[in-house]
Image (tube, rainbow, N blue to C red; front, side, top):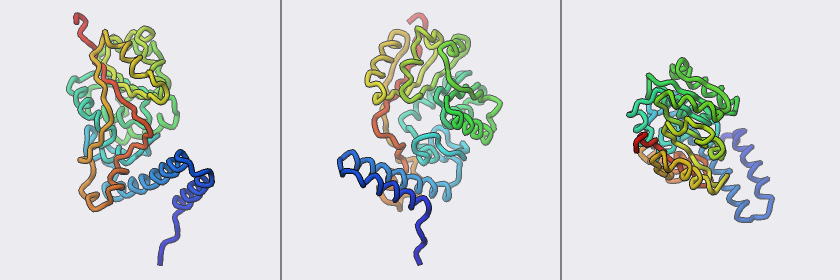
Length: 271
C-alpha cells in the first residue's frame, strides 16, 4: 500500500498549482521549476542527514557540527562541505596567515564564522548580522562546536567598527545581499585600508558593484575575482547510485544569478 502524501508534498503541490494558474510564460514556468527544485533539494538534504548526520565530512570546514538550518539558500551543499567551493583555497590561505580577528559581516547562521573559529583556535571572530533569527542560529552553532568564548555575535556593522582592523591582523568576510557598496567604503571606514577583504558582490542588486569596489581598493589592495564553481568531490559515495539531477541539486546553492566574490589583500605600506 502506498504511503499518503506528506504535508510537505501537499504544500508544494498546492503552491505549484497556484503558480501554474497564471499564463504559462517562460518566467512562470521558471518559477515553477525553481519551486520543484527547492522541494527536491530539501528531500536530498533530509536524506543526507539520515545517512551521515550533522557533521560536515569534506571541505575547509570538515569536522564542524552543522546541526542548524540555513538562514537562506541551500542547506545540502553546506552540510556536504561543497558550499561556495571556489572559496575553499581562499579560506585555506586565510588560515595560513593566522589572523587574530575575523569579521564576518552578514554571518547568517554562522557557516563561515564558526568554521573559521574552529580553523583558527587563537582568533576572535566577530559574527555580525541584522537578522535576529540568524544571530540565534549562529549562537547555537557556536555552542555546538565549543567556540562560544571566541565568537562575538552582534547586529549591524558600522563604518567606525572597522577601526579595530588598524590594531589587529584581521580579515573581513562580507556578504550582505547588495549592501556591500554602502558599507565597504574605505574613506568612511578607514580600517578597511589595513585589512584583507573577501566580499561577495551582488550584480542583481547593483550591476556596478564589482567595478565600484575594484576602483575603491585597487590602489591599496591586490584584487582577484572569484567566480562560482562546483566541487563534485563533496558528494558522498552513496550518491553514486542517485540520479544526475539529484547530484546536481545536492550541490545547488539556490542562487538564480552569478554572485562573484572579490578577494582583496592589502598591499604592504611601502608598495
